[in-house]
Length: 246
View 1 (tube, rainbow, N blue to C red):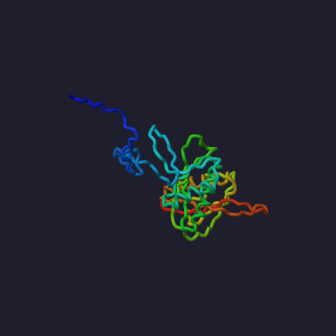
View 2: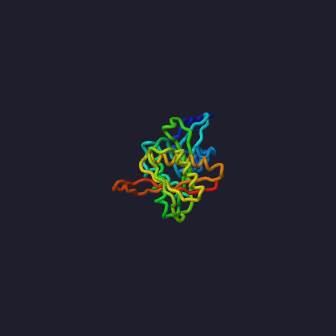
View 3: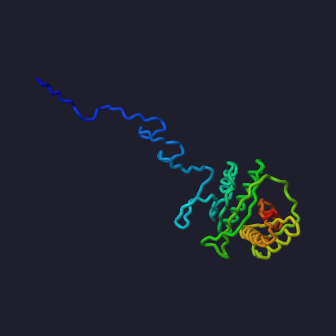
């Protein structure tokens, strides 16, 4: 006699899932290493040093390490970001701005950052240049601040202080800067208000162009200064110029 035994088919209840080892994906042996995406070997970009803004140029995406200062930016938060980058050991980022208000904020931010980093024997030097940007023009300057990081040094003795007025001529001021630096003087530009600060920065950019033929260059270190205007104390910006070899 042949006995046929029927067995019940189907999924087993309470069946345990495949073993999932820590560091593996869904138990199938695909190793998920920290810092990699989907376990397929593509490294994940995870730079916490400072924010990177994504730009588009000729349909190619790239990242640009920079701080962007707008008309509504505030100096202290910008200085805080700058301090954070420098303290983590990274090179100081470039600062982009457009318009006199943004330029004034950027200069103040560097002045605040310099003050905060002084205790760590770190100092910053600004080398400004013009920026070609949509919306910029003769009435709306656009700059890039390239920051050079170095050790705190003994302050130079200023031998010539130039008061920059809001209605000054940048080309004339730049010519005066060029000649005074060429004569070996230690020059400082004194500015009160956003328009005067913007004009001082513009004058330095033009003076840098004049110095290219002599293979010389300049940068500035900004700091806050107190001025007495008609018996009243007013806070402004002092930009001490430093001559460099280009």
